[in-house]
Length: 137
Picture 1: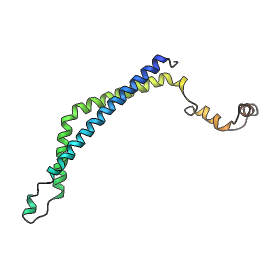
Picture 2: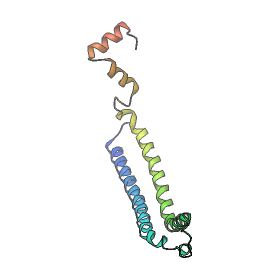
Picture 3: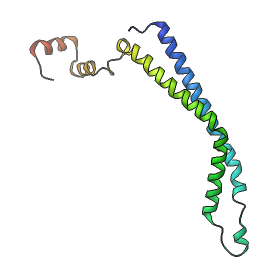
């Protein structure tokens, strides 16, 4: 199937929609990181054991950090799941559309036969000579 201007425009729109969905997912990730960054000082203040002469347990901080991260992520999980599904659908649709348009719009570097000829032949006359005399590849 020939890559018509309509198909190329559709592919461009789909790729832009995919970039936008990826940006939204990245933004959610940055928001979660920002919230966790603001919580870190509060997580480290619980040192009840140190007052009694015992050092603070470093694994307790990690447990508090992980539990808070899980809670914050759980709040945004429906959005993350929806965007992940949307990205998967868009990726599949883009690949399908590219496969329909690809045979006519492939470059020589994507076609192993053309790439081989490009590396072997220096000029069109050289290619004709190789074909004529059956040079081994």
